Length: 322
Image (cartoon, rainbow, N blue to C red):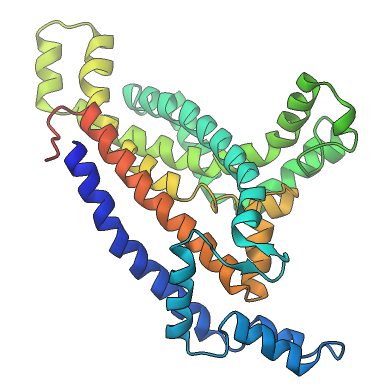
């Protein structure tokens, strides 16, 4: 297993290089750059802009710029964010913890609810409860996240007044005790976390239901039942271990989007994560911040798939890596 992990990590290096190169070139396909907007400001001289372009190699071809970026990356320097006036690593680090916290909570809610409901619907196929849960799932998949966020903000914050209307903390956050601060953050997290979890929950419940139904029709499950094994043992020891494998693979891909999957919801609910920062970076053509975000996403994709493969080998003894 260790040899397999090391080989996967080595293979990921050219993959990340290819991903960052394509992203870098696509960014340059857009006309202009960040400094073109500065030229519209009469208070900034052309000489000053030229000095900055030379400092950050914007006066060279995109290919040369990419190699300079790789040279800086070798020293763990992701560049400088022009819109935030700070190093890219500091910008991402200052907001990433908020996005990760929100995404992890939403992911926990999703899996905690979707997997048991999917199993229940498969065992009780075509029952009234199955039809009700299926209808709720289709509804959850059809409602856009931004619209659901607006509805929940209006209902729970404006109409009922039981939840905060946005942000991550209250204005008197620093005056609260430690436990009160935790409760304050949790209250602000309820709406964005539920919004993110709803769409994923609906899809995962349907996938789990389909996987479980397919496994329940397998010959070895029928044989286990014919031997007189208890139904719970048939379901959770034999059927579930095979039905869960595709969900583990999805879990690996879900980790890759942990920094970006909540962007739109963060913007609508004013959650201070990476969503607003990255949207501003793309709109202002903040090259190094966009590349830093793309690199983080690529690294998480590699790590997520590696974790999924390890979990699959642990879950299914038939899977072996050499």
